[in-house]
Amino acid sequence: MTNIAVQLKAEISRIAKKEVRSETKQLKKASVSYRSEIAALKRRLSELEKALSKAKRVSAKPTNSVDAEPKENLRFRTSGFATLRKKLGLSAEQMGKLIGVSAQSVYHWEAGKSKPRASQMPSIAQARKLGKRGAAARLAELGSE
Image (cartoon, rainbow, N blue to C red; front, side):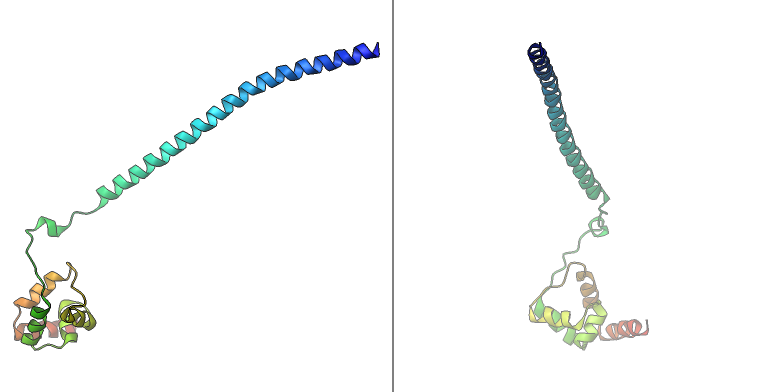
């Protein structure tokens, strides 16, 4: 009798395990599909957030006031700049102060080692319009500030 009871118990547990296995197999498949779907949604969300931040950066950039004004064609030549400084009778330090840069920048521009930035070109153009007295007056004005 105990033999039949043990066999019956073993058979019942085998069938129960088989049923549970089939149920959990379906749940595992669903879980895997949900996880992959969640991962895809997270990727899409991050792509959309990146696109949004990029769009904000593009729209947040201020339009340059230089673009609104008609552009002057400002050119720079090293020899012309050196001649201008000599014509005004200024040292490199004074010329730098007049333009708003360091004396070393003036030396580098004259030597051709570098070129002034576009933001510095209008101040160089202003210096071209000055005479000796105007440059001296402007330097005195800058020195008192």
